Image (cartoon, rainbow, N blue to C red; front, top):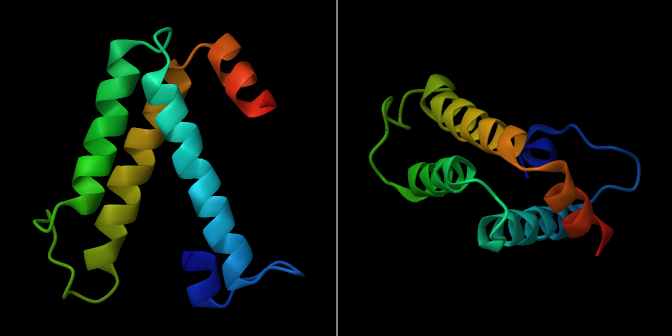
Length: 98
């Protein structure tokens, strides 16, 4: 979504394809979270990422230009990255093959 808003676009990329990609990522995270083979730590990190993204209270307020949103992107991105590193390879392959 931010790629579309900032003007960085790949050839053939439009808002619809970005929204579809975002929905696909959310489905992937939901399936990872529901899989019983996913470690509890990964599930907690994904939950924290979702809670922080939806929480109106931020570490740095959003009304500050650039850095207000930058903390959201960094914190959520780092939490998701850490969570996905904990997901077993078998779970990852099974979900992405569907």
